[in-house]
Image (tube, rainbow, N blue to C red; front, side, top):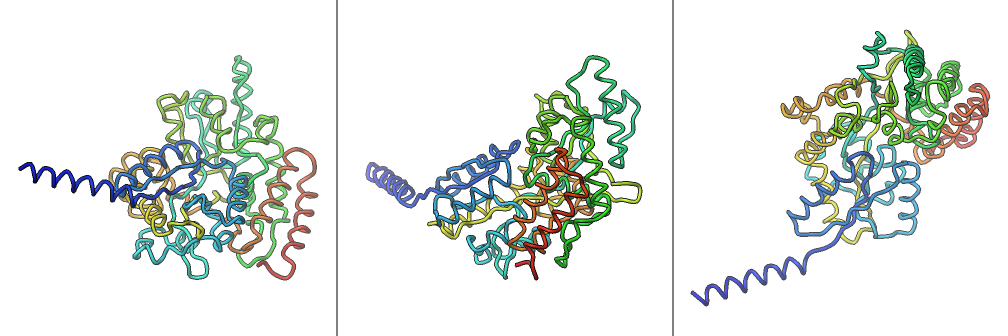
Length: 422
């Protein structure tokens, strides 16, 4: 008996030593917008419990422009400091040379995800990232304030402007001087490209560069869209909106100080949280049209997970990536944080349908989404987007007119393109 106990204890000890000996430590970069970081840590802990390997989770800048700059520095140095990267939907083509082909590890599981996302992440036949969550933007509105002032949910941007001004003025007269009509993302960064692209598309103004690579941004429709948006700053939107990212806008709206907000789906669960000042008072709907002849348009967004080719543990990093993008983890992220799945069958899951009304709206919104021209402009997309959001920011700040800004932007884009994008 004693011998068996000693033997069992010895075996257990050897097993523990074996696990310790083979336990590796990985690093993953996760976003920190809303509940992103906490949910990432929670899922990573589940993988650690399953495999015995340790993972350090590091947060990255909320601004996607700043995050990309950081990633490019890391990749340029061929650093192995980060094994798994959370990357934007527009970055696979740009970063493909630094990422591992995941196809040898997936065993076909990528077919569970929306094909458009898998196609987006496939560069020269290599699957360089797995889809993690997909986004399209919504218009969030205060149901209680619209009812209080007998106003409808707006369907055009002009209608939104008028309603926001009416409610804002009435609330100011009653002493609620902190209230603004509309908050959005106006900082000169990728988020402003998303906002402004929606304005252009809603006015039938195209998508900066069309799918054939033709520069289309200098149009009357684009001019009208930017002229209207330029009227918002300081009138229905706070002057500080020109430095807002997603979280600054959410902070103002969730504290009860805005009638309307443009934001991604993650803001829904937070607006309904126990500590939210507007719990139960919020509605969501498609972003407004440019006019009655325009269309609803929302920029296609979302994030992927990719493995660095400089990782010392590519097989383990791929396993972590596939675990985090799996059906069960995506379901938990939707239920707890409103991060929308990239696996189509999850939208038919009864528990998901019952618990997440945003998911149903999202599927409809996906049908109205507009893609950024990252595929058409290839490695030049980052330059294109930078020129675009800086031109738009100058208009919003009153430094130039829409007509002057678009003409100058078109000239700069032609100079970058030359004969073709590459």
